[in-house]
Length: 380
Image 1: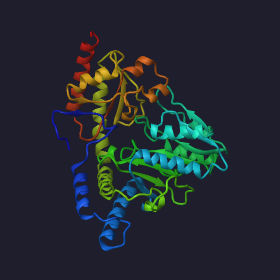
Image 2: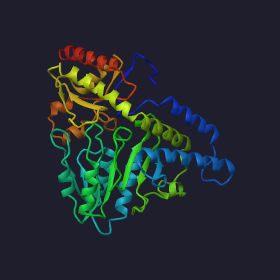
Image 3: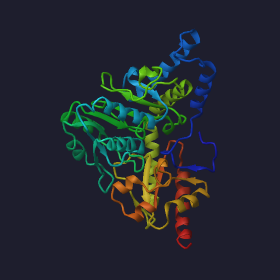
Image 4: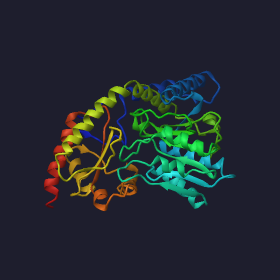
């Protein structure tokens, strides 16, 4: 999949390169399944069949029924639909929302908007090591709680959460409370059990499908109200003509991702360990990712050079990492802030995120660039 041997791309949590097999499937669908899948003539019936075949592929990787899986444009849209639809169905009897303190902005901001509408929002901040106190999350749920949200894998540190325990605990406290999981960074990397989970969001461009396609799981029988209205596509959950070619591409990416998951995890774990060993030789560096983080993400601070300055230095050497979530656009990391990190730790943090295309040479190029950057940039 790599198109430039001199490019060391280590920002896969922001986006991944599109797999050529996925691109080929999209191209074929554009040419052969051009009809509107909601129409009734023969070409449309074929398009509808292709759409449902893609739905079944994605659903299989999540462990749900195809009828519980709805295509969206993005993970952000999936999160917003899940949150707003859950609250709309429950606001008559409750007004409390429980959420972790380091969610993605697509969860944080709609909940912040609901707070402005009068909902009580309880945020459970992560511990200093980046892990989440699940007991505190569950204990915050009461009979007035309409929604509880917890991401499966944090997008900045890779911290993974015990979703099975979270969902079961919430339902024990209040069986009517909706449980939503942002699984954008977890999908096809770790298994996320759906038992007691009412809704779950995933995104295509994190798994080698294009930007502009995502999916939302809604449990069968779940009480949920569509927050947007339109022509009734996707059973009214996400109105608007489906992006059939991209849905087909997402199905291919899902299929391939599920098939290679174990091998990818092993290869990426080796790269993560190589990077950690190299960073251990640099006295200035401290690791911000917790011990339970997925191997795909490693967040660290070098305490000497501002993140953006180091990013520019590395970029000149064709090494590409980030300072945190791409959605923050250079703002200080809200995850590291929630963890209680000091200003210098936040201001010098870098996030490395791997995929199966990465190589030991990528890690070595990063370490070499980081070491030379620390020597040169501290004297500017």
